[in-house]
Length: 399
Ligand SMILES: Nc1ncnc2c1ncn2[C@@H]1O[C@H](COP(=O)(O)OP(=O)(O)OP(=O)(O)O)[C@@H](O)[C@H]1O
Ligand SMILES: [Mg+2]
Image (cartoon, rainbow, N blue to C red):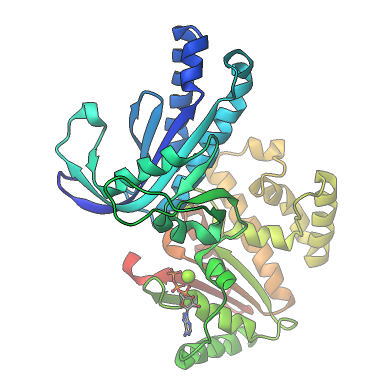
């Protein structure tokens, strides 16, 4: 980023409630040690969400998301960061709270808007950043109660389907005519994709796209005849790729075809096999809240019913789902393990296709990981002559 550049970013300001009390009641060395630990945690958590810590001033941390590399989910990353940082500090609190007479808690303000870099002086942080965005971020942080995360309406609009939030009364910002309405970010909601989020808000009536639907029905017919099909749905963000698949899938008689679905994520290109994990969980009937024994029993029964040969792959499925790692897998080397994982995943998909026509849709393939690409490549070599359709959605601007 160069001096004077303007771009959209999300800023996070957090400070420590309890800092003054620590300074009053503890040795400076102990305060220093605690602050160092909090700062180390802050750097680790911010960087794990691909943001940067721009600066620490006293007990305040300022982090930026979308500066070096913009992600469309930067505001989500900022809120996840804040939730983790708050949790870490809450967990540290019992070490000192009795002695300082109050709990240690972070409080955070997050805002998304245009930022401008100005001439860089490292004493002012990694990037010198000014503008309304910074003022609003700081104002939200000041307004936040201990352990509270306040986001601006602009950030709220981008995170709303993904987090439970509460609207709060408007506050005044110095030097600004209009009031600022903060939202309290509480906890993540179980939404996996933008499309699911828009589905939650309710669909608009579906119009047009008859040609595209006709192409999909044509491919389905050939799939049913045993001619494996591969489809790419390509187009700009928001053009209707996910909705097209949704309309197509909803129109199918699901008793006659199996539909497997998965999604790549903006943060997922470093997680191997990510788009296959949801499918795997669903196919093995892995339900959260069950004991490991129950999960294993159900998975074995499901695999046995699907195809007896699949039982041999069970250790690989369990490893992928982080349920259990067999010592045999722990000893496998990179290429060998990768080959085995490929066999296990394609084995499951082909077994489904043996039973009845099967459609595998993987969304947002522009964010795919390399291991998943290898699985698809392998699948393409196997699917000829089988009732399998593989479809991926892809943003044309990412090609
Ligand atoms: N033909 C259509 N008729 C009515 N609404 C549509 C149509 N196509 C898409 N939409 C609506 O437009 C919005 C964006 O569509 P969708 O999520 O399918 O885009 P996308 O191409 O998958 O974008 P992205 O690349 O971000 O995933 C959704 O709310 C969807 O319901
Ligand atoms: Mg989509």
